[in-house]
Length: 242
Image (cartoon, rainbow, N blue to C red):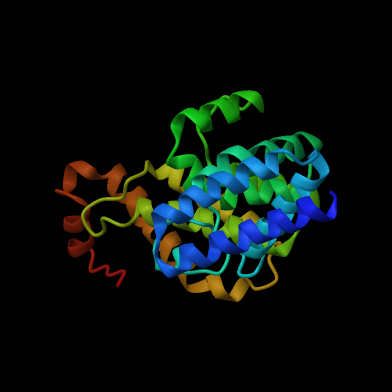
C-alpha cells in the first residue's frame, strides 16, 4: 500500500471512530461506507491485515463473545459494525476457515451476534463452507480447539456449553427443557472438555448443581405418573437446588 492510500485509510478510520463515539451515528455510518469502499481497493493481504488487527482489538483482549449491541460494545474505541463485518471481515474469515486457521475459526464463534442478525448472509456463509446445520458458535469453538488446544478457546467453549445447559434448567423448579438422556450427554461433553481446562475449580459448583438436577430430572421422568410437575417431585423428596 502506498503512503497516500495508507494516510487516507487511516484518516477516514480515525474520523469514523471520532464521529461514532461522539454520538453522530448517521454521519459515522456514511463515513464507514466510504472507508469500506477505500479498503476494498486494497489488495487481499492488506485487507487481511486490517481484519486481523480489528478482530484482535475487539476479540482477543477479553476473549468474550460479542453477543449484544449495548453500551459496553458501542462505546468502545474500536467497534465492529455489521457493514464492516459483512463486506470486509466475513470474506477473510471464510478463507481462513478453509485454510484451517484456529484463530480465525474461533473469531467466527465470537462474532455470533452478526450471524444471528442476518440469516441470508449466514446461510450463504455456511453453505460456502459446506456446513449443513444452522449457525452455532459452539461448533466453531470445538473446531478451533481441536486444531490448537488453546486454553482461551477452551474457556469460550466451556462458557458456551454452560450457556446452553443453563438455558435447559432456567425454568426450574417447574421443568427442565431437555430430555434426561440429552442433558446427561451435554454434561458428559462438558466434563470431557473440563478435564483439559487449567482452571477446573471455577466450574465445580455449577457442575455439581447440574449433575444433581440431571439425576433428579431423570428420576422424575421415569416416575412422572407419581407426581405432577418437577416441582411436585422436588417438594415430595425434600430436594432444593437453590
